[in-house]
Image (cartoon, rainbow, N blue to C red):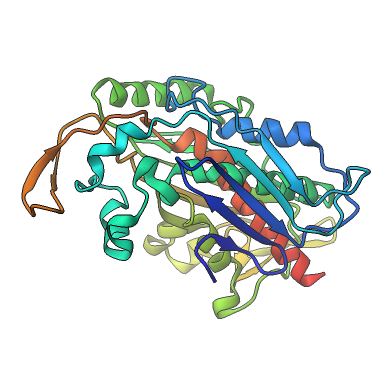
Length: 359
């Protein structure tokens, strides 16, 4: 399957480049006869949009999707692929003119050069840019509406910025959504202020900082997924690793389980109102690759933004000499706040596809 396509029965194709005239998504397999709330789509995409605060890039984009197909004359989905284009309106390609032969440390520049040679589009990171998450959020917004109508809710929050951690939600009965402020989605406002200070400190130093996003899903029925390579964890991880800057995904207790004993990590089964549940949720809602009906949760680690204002060493691809690189342009000092809706979007796409496959 091409690298810009995800899903089987619900298939999402993402197209474009950061500094191309536009980017977009084609959503195939979305059920017919559904009325999309476009105000909700706009609000969701607005959470990811740049240029709104001190912790995001100053590049301003309207992120208004132009839907070209997939609706009938009544405005309902008609079963045809839903195609939307988002015009790029605020590119500054000249900022990248000096980077053609000097790959940026931490970026995909050198890897792209090895794969495609000197013809790849370095402007804004081309297909590797965080800009490509805008059409992902468009597709995810459609899926979130479908899932909510059948009782499935998805909510993510900033779990960590650098050394500052947010509070952990109740992972047995999480309140949804997990956040109140959609611009900086955290559970604890106090911890959120400390995180903002951490981001500002990195920005003032010409540096950047990483963090993590925790995502929780409630209302998910048991029995989704399968053993081995059909596992729900693997399918989610594949989609989540498609988000730029993601470097790790852990489900449930994750790596903490490596230092635990079985008596600590095993979730005892119990009855609650006649239903089988678990008394704890170290498994994070998935056992053997199959959903259990408990809240599903996982944490996604994001690396620091590689574009920083500090001088860095690189190699000139033409002369094969070491050289110093100073990066210009507009970049997020931390990608994590804007990544929260992207994690929700990818999760919605994967889970809706899984549900439609079982329908």
